[in-house]
View (tube, rainbow, N blue to C red):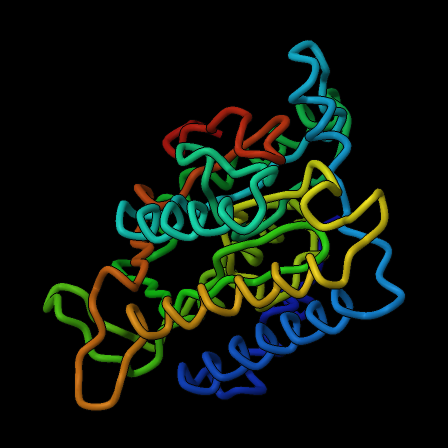
Amino acid sequence: MSRPASLNPYDKIIDSLAGNPTRIQALFEEERNDRNNEAKEKLLGEEFQGVNVDEILVNTLKNPKYQDPRNCLCIWARPSFQVKDIALQCQLMLKRLSPNLWLTPQDCLHMTVIVVALSITPKELVDKTIKFKPCLKKLASIFHGQQIRLVKPKLSFNEGGVALSFVPAADEETQDSRTKTTDYTYLHLRRDIFALCSEKGVDAETQKGATACHITLARFITQEDHSRNGNPSQEAMAFWVTGIEEINEMLAQKYWPHEGSVPPDSGSWVIDGRRSLDIRAGTIWYGGGQSLDLESEP
């Protein structure tokens, strides 16, 4: 049985902010900054035991026959060429800080909008996909002509890796007259997709935080760059964190709005319909899997 509409986790947040884009953006920024501050404190703490090496990724890289056991069904947003360019710039700088870092390939870059099913068996995935099929055609038109704009790119980080994060646009000006900021934000989009799933009897997952809005750029596959003689190194970790903060200063200077000037459109990401969405199924953790056709018949 699907959840009642009243249990949509996004409704309460939007209502508490009166659906105001400026307040929604402020919430995203506050929580993004809090997560980075918490990560910094943890990574630089005396008790830190080292970065989290992604063992499944390591196995995948070492053995082409290795099968990732985690099957998922998710709704992704694919980045624009401009966003992919920002991502590549960041990845190259991160690689200089940590040469053994694993970087997400450009054609695998994505942002998870909604998780329909997470870490299930192949048979469960087939059943879930069949149940999800009725949602596909409605997903193609869920935007109703609206454009979702994301702004203020910034690196978010923790012990598992690094992501390029965004916040929903508010009243920022844009150089492109065809791109307009409306009261319909990324948070509204997540709410409506979640509601559509519930309406069709599909219970989407809710583990992903409401303000999560990021593309994973890099993961750790070894402790080598952040340890000395086999032990976690505070000096090496401080170098890593400082480097990330310097990249964020560059991103803010180059792509964020500044008083008296219109921010470059290359620093914003417009999600505007079926071309931006990718319904992905299978072993998709690192950008793989297969896409489902949005025009599929139920």
